[in-house]
Structure formats: C-alpha cells, structure tokens
Image (cartoon, rainbow, N blue to C red; front, top):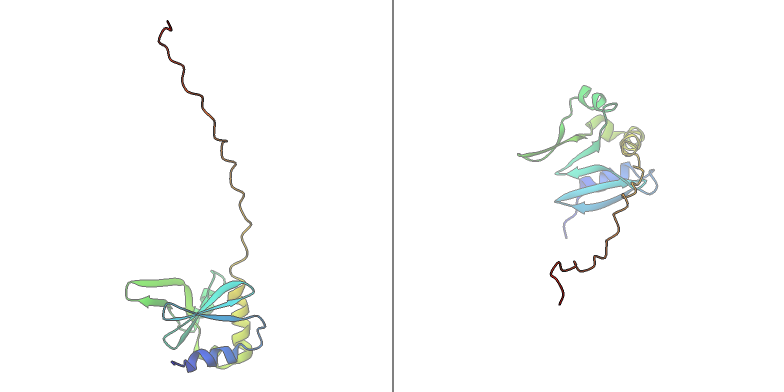
Length: 129
C-alpha cells in the first residue's frame, strides 16, 4: 500500500483544526474544513484557495497557481510557501483564511414552473352529421 509522507506531514501540521478532513482525489488529496473545500495536496505540494484579498500574500512570497497538467491551471489555488508550511501555527491561520474564502451561498429557490396544462383534445372543425 502506498504511503504519502507529505500528506501525513501536512495533516500533522494542521492537527489543531478540528474537523479537518482529507480525501483522495484525482491523484492527490482534497482538504475540507467547516464543510468547505479549501486545499489540494498534489505531487508533494500544498495549495490553498485564494481570494483577491489573499492572493498578494502568496505572490509576494513567490508562489504560483496550482497546475494539474500542462494544459490545466487553477488560478484560484496557490502553492503554500515553504516557510508557512513549516510553521504549524501560521499554516493553521492560512488554512482558516482559505476555508472562509467560500462563504455559503444562499440557496436559490427555483422559479415555479408553470403547471402542466392538461390539454383537452382539439375540437374537430368538421361538421358533424
């Protein structure tokens, strides 16, 4: 059975986040906290969800967006800097910030669909005999 030391390290660093879950997905792992998907572990790297408010913190430290393949880049997930990853307290703060980037959307009520009309057979215009 394959073991993933990096995944285990990340989960150890985030152990103080009660309710954090990690699931295998697409060759990597997805992180959820407070029912929000906020992180990706892929090929020995950790990526967090960013917002316009948090992206500059990532860019200032020289990190890049998540690139799953040469043709697919997710610009809303950036690599967590190594200095942040090494400090469990700071990493937990960044994880919390990433997890609140997706506030729950109010559920939309579907527009009432018009009731199906029970159509009566069309009257024949032929004269009856």
